[in-house]
Length: 227
Ligand code: FES
Image (cartoon, rainbow, N blue to C red; front, side, top):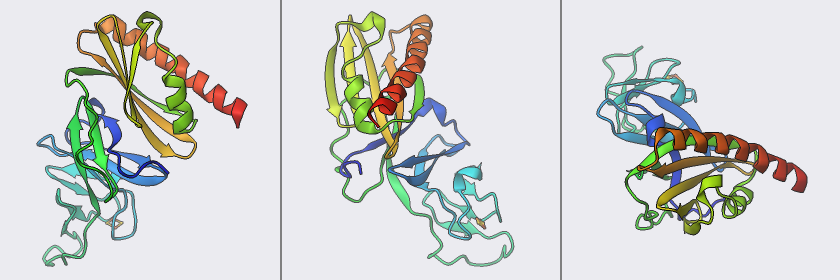
């Protein structure tokens, strides 16, 4: 179980466009990440209160999200506002999806999914970061974090490594900054959200994306060897 006082990175900002949603998980619990038409990001429990359908399969309609199954609609505070089979019903206030605090910073969407989260401890990252990619690795958080503290892309050695939080590493070399934010999906699977300083050109970002693909295989092979 990840430290519940931490803000958890749940997606690269660029991966959730206005009007879209995606399912994700933290420590095995399911969440929907969605962005309304005004650009505000939301992180909710990924479960419709009606019959439990995943809201990440639903449709964003303006600043509301509609469930795929029977079309119940929820406003951006999680409150059910419309039950299509009973359009004139004054929907009870008790029909509500659990929602979580969200901060969007440094090219990432961060969520506070525990009441214990220390809202004052967001990692201190540069704001001008560009997305490289998210990687989904079949290996636990601790293994990924330990290995990433040791390895660098070929053009970023030697690097100065800073652990900005237990879920975020920053490597700085030759004026470039590489950030890796870790999302513990479950006990054996981790998402790595990778960003680089805005000075990186397209070729550098493409090289980093290729390096990251190889990194996934290396991390998974390490896990197979120790498991
Ligand atoms: S399960 Fe969502 S509206 Fe029925």
